Structure formats: structure tokens, C-alpha cells
Length: 453
Image 1 (spheres, rainbow, N blue to C red):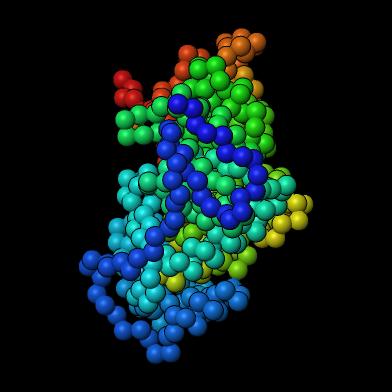
Image 2 (image 1 turned 180 degrees about the horizontal axis):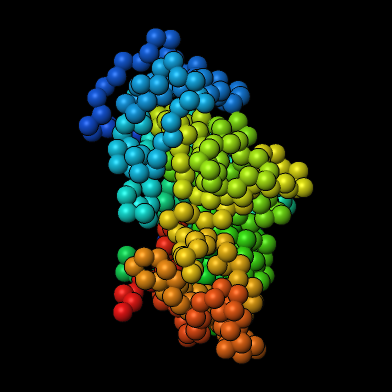
């Protein structure tokens, strides 16, 4: 049975549609009062009023002093009383993942439990109130309205809604933008069903597709094999990519194949929330009024995020009341710059994660540097890195798009000359490197480690 075509008209009431095979259902976000095991009850500080604090947050940005008052309600920051912000220490991601409950404040309002994908091996559980989720979505929707003009749009979400908090967030954003959203995640517990996915996408005819870069690469590879890629890509004019490992070179490569505008949709994490969104010129812009943004530079000092600064991003997000972080070290290397697009906030590019860097002849190189070279030739479909157990890069494997005219040996030789690493052409890179795009740190699986004898 073929899926019924949805009329391409604006719905009377905004809603979220979900498609899976021949089944359609409506989705609403449930909000419940959670019980945090192991967290001791706390008495709200004098003068605390959750309702008035919500009003302050909605009427304008929450300043750092208010945020520090919240922090005193947590186990992690009880000792910071009387300390100026400039003297506060850094908060490591490892500490947060080891004991996330220490960074939670008492729940004075109903909240929903949100967990990270666990892609780094340690899932983190946080709580968000309904107001926080809606306020976060509203701020992003205002930014995305400039990326998605001429609506209403039909949005296909290829995110993992079962494990990724981003899936829930996207649905709230699209609800705000009056768009119809379909959950079209191609992966199931029993494995991907690409033919069913192709039928659903063809029936829904999305104008916008939201996915991680790895999923888009995987979908392109499999749909080409089925001979339906040209039809699938014909309706989508915009691809919004999510994920910390999203590089300009990757977006250019996807844009060539999908013949669409590819924009870095947003940047952040479950722990710190959304801290930046993309513009049509390919840069990220920090969210104004969402906190403070600093950069840990090479000499170990902290400086404000500003054009010309490069280093590891450190954020103090102030939007959320139930999960408080101060000077949270994200692990992402960024390069701040000037952008003429007119969007507010500081513009920057993500160079890659520190733990995803690889060594070439003793020097560390980030993912952005690798992909800038590998994807320079439009004939390259995908790649994988082979390294020893000490993260020294020993070989690069590339696959080429079907019908590519340049000789593979010539492309491989060019990459080998530029990076100084043996490069070989393979029929297809390991499926693990592509399908790991289900989670945000899919680039981690691009490195295949081997024992070098």
C-alpha cells in the first residue's frame, strides 16, 4: 500500500506528523514531575520564587549574578558564595558526566527528563521545564525563520528521536514556525529499511531535511544504490545539519550532491543547551542573552569570544534553571571571525572536537583540516582514517561518487601530497563510519585503529 499524499497547503492548526511505513500519528510532548533518585531535597533559598524567575527570564536575559544565585542551590557550586565570576574555576565535561545530579537545582515546577545520546560513552541526564523548552525553541525559531523563508515548510527530521534531545527540540521549533514535521528516521532496531524510507520521503515531499551529516552521507550512498537519489533530492531546497562535527567542507560536499543550500542549523549540547545557530553564509552566531562565551586559548588563559580568537569554547549558559553550569569546557575548538550577514551574536566556525583530533607526523590536526583537503575534489564521496593506538594517522581511505570522471589514483595522490599520508581508493568506506551518523559524534568512528607492527 502506498502512503497517502499530504496536500501541500498550510495546516489550519500547526501540528507534528510522524510517518513510519504506513502508520501516521500525532505527537505531543509529555511533561511530568520527575523524581531524582539519590538527590537530597533542598530548601529553596530565601526570596526564591520560581514563577517570578521565569518572568524575569522571559522578559530579558538572566544576568550572571542571578545565575550564580541558582548555582548555590546545587551540590557542585555550594562553595562559590562571595566569589566573583572572573575568579571561578572551569567545569569539565568529565565531572558533569560523572555526577550530573550535582549540577541540578530543586525542581519547583514540572519538568521533563532529557538524556544525551550517550555517543561519547557516558549519557548525561538533565531536566528541562516546559517554559525552558518552549523559550529555547522560540529563540532558535526566530533565527531559523531567516534560513527558511517563503514558508510554510514541510520538514523531514532524520534525527534519532529515541536517543537525541535534538529531535524533541526540532519538533518544538517547527511547531513555532507553523511547519509540518515528519519523523523519517531511516534506522530501526532491526536495521535500516532504505526502500521504505525512500517511499516515505517521496510521499511527503519535504522542502527541508534536518539530519546529522553522517546520516545524509549514508542516505545518499544507499539511495544512489537504489537508483532513487535524484528523485528524493528534487524537492528539498534546504538541508539543516546538526552536530558538533559539522565542518564547512562537509557542508559544501553535501550541497554539491543534494543540490541544496546546506546550513549549520545549531550548535550546543544537551548539557548547555543551544548556544549558536547558523546563517546563510555558513557561519555560526552565538545566541544573545543566553549566557557568557569565553575561549580557552593556547597559553591557558580565558578570553571573551570575539573575532580573531581561536581555542576551546567555554560557556556559562543562563537559560536553564534546573541544570546549572558555570564556565563549562565544551571540548570544541572554534575560530571566531567577522560575518557580514547581519545576524547578531559573535560569529565563529567549529574546527572540531579536541578528542577527535589526529596526529600527522607528530602534529595534531582537527577534523576541519582533514575534510578541507579530502573533500576538495567533488568526486570524493566519503572517507575513513586509519590510525595506530596512539592516534598517529597511517592511512586515508576514500570512496568516489559513481560516474566520477577523474582517475581515483590522481585524486588519492593529490590528498597524499597535501597531507603527507598514504591514501588509497576503496569501493566503499566502512558502513560503521557512515551509519554512526545517528549520533552527534559520528566522526569518532571515522578513525579505525590498527596495531602497527
